[in-house]
Image 1: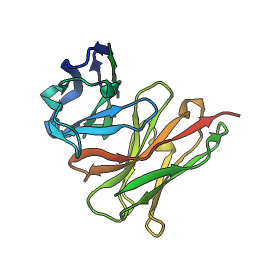
Image 2: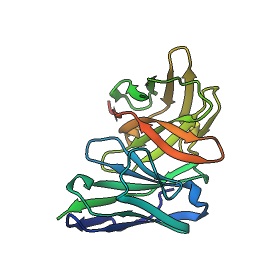
Image 3: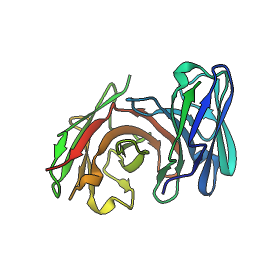
Image 4: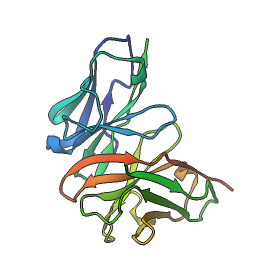
Length: 108
Length: 123
């Protein structure tokens, strides 16, 4: 199943803050939520796991939070290099891994 | 540093079997700390997890694909493989292999990915 993410597309100016949302298929432990960044033509990159733990090498402009079924990814001080599609992922249900449909982030 | 690289045919005929291999370099595939996974992405669409395999051979699969999926590990060559049977045009996608930091109970995500390989199903 595909997790709902909102908004579908977001256009933001450099330097601003953005918040992306994801709804889990059912109430889940925050341990089971991850976020990925996929730039055009590239493989996804893990940003956040355990809902709020940054992966190795991820700058602190990226942060995650949430509980139950509602989770968010926040990007502070937006940079042009942040243009990408962002996916959330849930672990532990059936299928074991479910991805969101993605939020496309554009720079104004 | 650990790197993954997918390989296999870029074109598969309908009803045939898609076969891909992921080569793991810079580390051993025979680790108890993670599984090894496959994810695909049809053109312009979202990611879809296919399945994951432990180096000893235990697997877990996406139920939507499980009847057609076979995964295996070859520790002698540090590779793991995916076979998807009876393919149709709907299986056309970029296929990624990835290190799956799960242990069957918890997950720290898919943290290292290959570059992906495009597979087109067409006659």
